[in-house]
Amino acid sequence: MKRLLGPLLLAVLLIGVGAAIYFSVNQQFALSQVVTVKGVIGSEKEAFFTDPRVIEALRKGGVVVQFDKAGSRKIAATDLSKYDFAFPGGVPAATKIRKDHPTAKAYDEFFTPMVIASWQLITKVLVDNGIATDHGGYFTLDMKKYLDLVANNTRWNQLKNNTDYSVSKSVLISSTDVTQSNSAAMYLSLASYVLNDDNVVQSEADIQKVLPLVAPLFLKQGFTEYSSEVPFQDYVSMGVGKAPMVMIYEAQYIAQAAQTNGISSDMAILYPEPTIYSKHTLIALTPNGQKLGELLQNDPELQRLAVENGFRNTNTDLFKQVKKDRNLNLPDTLINVIDPPSYDNLESMINDIQLKLTPTP
Image (spheres, rainbow, N blue to C red):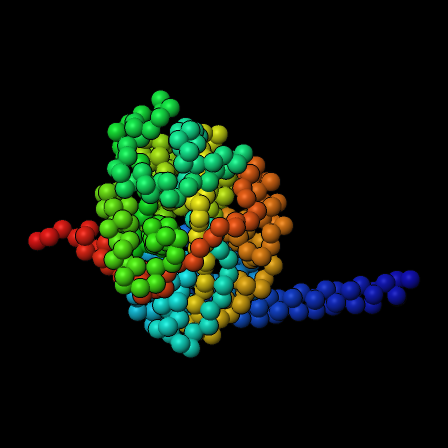
């Protein structure tokens, strides 16, 4: 028995050592295959790329992502030669980048509708005045009726049955800087559609028709931030006094529900009627950028984590589960969704508004 035990133990030891060497070599090989991919992204995706679970899933796929942040309009106008990928929000910016980089590959990764973060006391006033509709957990906002209020310079204390928010501030949705940010550009796209008799702005005549009506939506706001992150955090931390209605991405609201402070019972979410999607398209400028684009598009774990971070994709069952887990009653699908104008037409409207925002010397 002793004669047999010795060689057997030696064989086990050799197998163990061999296995350790094998796994160590494979681990080192795997690490050597990890590439660093640098890009520029819209700030609304920062939480996704800094999620430790996303970082780990990307590393397993052979990618480490480094990124800069910028407004989507700025991304579209930036020299991208030092980047492997650009990841703006919205179709117009992505289209412009693809036009400027015809050999680049595009990957539609996920999307999110534009929504309005508000408060229960505000939605009550809006419902009582026939401007919003209660759907039992979320609300819809009639954009035509809202825009009529803005055109008439209506103030909150002029609305009927308004005892909880009877202030002299104008009825106005707060947004980001339309000259820099995609979320504000989507707001402009939506308003211009409604004010163009429910038609996408397609010509200079359309632009001149709607411009006097859409410009006040931004001119009356005063100072605005370039990033959608800041007004949403102000909404969460500063309450209704800062801004009763804030144009945000639905993904921000869903992601907030997973945080410790979460979504409080006095908060509310309104879907503009009609609304608009912000599609998040990754533009791969190099082979490493393509590796990231394909990984985000095809890896089930990363697709799951995108939904966990509030975005929508083709996995509707997972979206329903996330809503359930976070006690959110939100629409599974949206029917009345419009397209944005072309990049050139949207840019023309933004440039005209920018001229009005710029003080005369």
